[in-house]
Length: 115
Image 1 (spheres, one colour):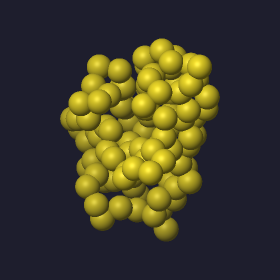
Image 2 (image 1 turned 30 degrees about the vertical axis):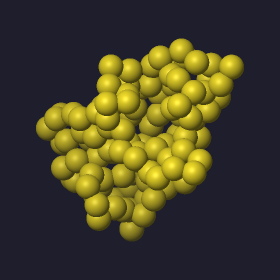
Image 3 (image 1 turned 90 degrees about the horizontal axis):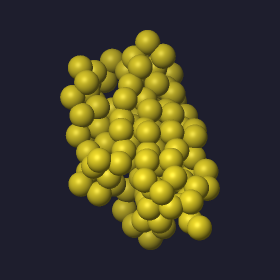
């Protein structure tokens, strides 16, 4: 069974940076597209960035120019570098394949942007 483990979240001031990591077991990194999703309180989960096995990348408009997604297939890991963080980036961040059907969701990692 595929397991996803996200890490790297925390509390950061506006304008700060964080780097998230997602490690997966199983065969997930043979999947063509992997992505980072986030879910803020009271809101639906949204896709913020995706990357193909060949390096094709897409970003949501809300994070374009501030977030950078990357992957290391040899390490079964996907990263999300988040710069110039804003309070509206506060959410639980998850990784998973793009699009559905999704693997079982991991526990996510909480990102809180606040002064």
